[in-house]
Figure 1: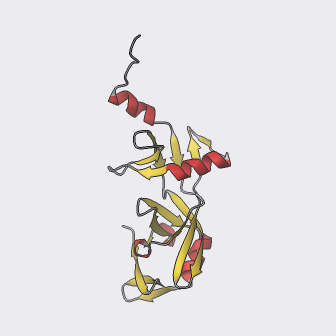
Figure 2 (figure 1 turned 30 degrees about the vertical axis):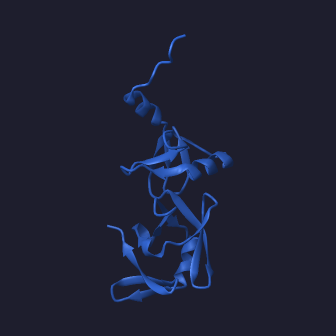
Figure 3 (figure 1 turned 180 degrees about the horizontal axis):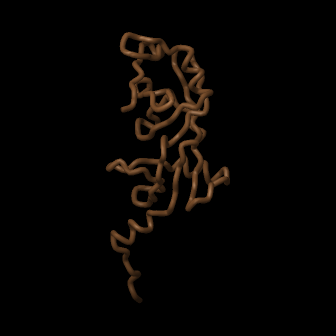
Length: 159
């Protein structure tokens, strides 16, 4: 019985280049074709991760992953709601999590961003989520801040 051929590191890296792209609007593409199948799109968003070197990936497990080009943010916060003085976001992967208040930043066109999934991924707040937070954004001497979770959280500007 012959032993199966082993792939070289270079061959494995080539196989990880699968042509996935996540555009600024949150649409997924594979080799130029939009992925419109709802469950496949949901699965891919759920597998989004970042390697230790900062490269964006779709991770199946510790050793199996493929690269994905992310134009803007990994996820979008499609809605937000206040629960007392705390904000909960619903992401476009259908997960709900509390806003990581000290990660709020502004980018181009005054878009709001934050970190999600324990800080691993970037999320862009959609207009609907932005308007919920805007209720409690205040102007300070240094810029703007969100009054939430018992404090005033500065909103940093992206470089």
